[in-house]
Length: 429
Ligand code: ATP
Ligand code: MG
Image (cartoon, rainbow, N blue to C red; front, side, top):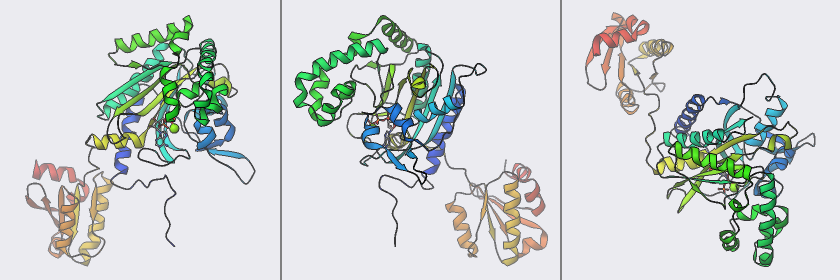
């Protein structure tokens, strides 16, 4: 019996995993400069956490949930996105309390699960890096979050980025716009896709997010939410666009973007990249927005929030197609070549002594001939080889060779074990 990984999942193998580590480490460092701290929430939550927050008519809830009943008959969902679980944790752990510094800024990184049709950049288990900031309605915070996302992508060497923003306004804005949209779409009801027919009255904004070709011409000519903004909503959005300009961040306003989740209001944004790796044209790799009603929707106090999620698989496709150079995986300082059985025993002591002092070291475990061992040292790009044979054992020395210059010296075994730095400095600098 041969097993295969489940459809839509991937094995991240050595060679590839170092790229993931680099991405995660870079994000961690950048987030900490912006004073965001890590939060780790469960990979699964009660079904309601997502159905309440993502919206009953969203693709995620209607089609993509990995949900099941556990042995205790609890309705469980593997998380399809990060925000809902973080909000649940924010409320449950009372991170809004008077002693907590606001805004509360957190980030997460980890796997998400959606039952989708797998294709390039679309998996069933995929990974997101995301941030959330709670407890401030300030448009400055919206811009900080957007600037941070752009900053991160630029750190990864991605050049052709397009920032698209829109506003969903406040409650009153959305209510007025909803009516206008229903009024506009109703006469075309019969021509809409089945999904859009279903959503027209429940949540007409969803129709704008439709990917069905038959809906596209209606999306293009739909009334714009920007014509329905209240003074408050317009004021917020103007501040955001102004601040983006002050920071020199280019953007385009696209009033048809609504985002896949129902909980957004005011600023929403998508960062797209233009790359053949993701298909033709611009593809979204990072998306987010403000969700001021979400915390109370999940039973918490009226606390506002804003965040984004970035798809790591899509980011990697992009970085590979842009030929971004990843830093080299921890280079090998020393390869120890042992000639004979006694030398092999000594060789383990030597690699361990080096490792205890923070050097990376390796040796042979297949009793190979010296020639094959030297080949390994070459292949692994070792900076130095140490050779130990019977003669060296007798004299308590080793042969130390720089692989770069070919220079060889005989040095004492003890000095190598106890102070390899000094040995290098003395003989090779
Ligand atoms: P799409 O319109 O492509 O389905 P979405 O609106 O469902 O995207 P979000 O829920 O906003 O995506 O998730 C944020 C990011 O996570 C996306 O921009 C993308 O990079 C990534 N992402 C979403 N779904 C998947 C998936 N199934 N596989 C890989 N990455 C994904
Ligand atoms: Mg989707």
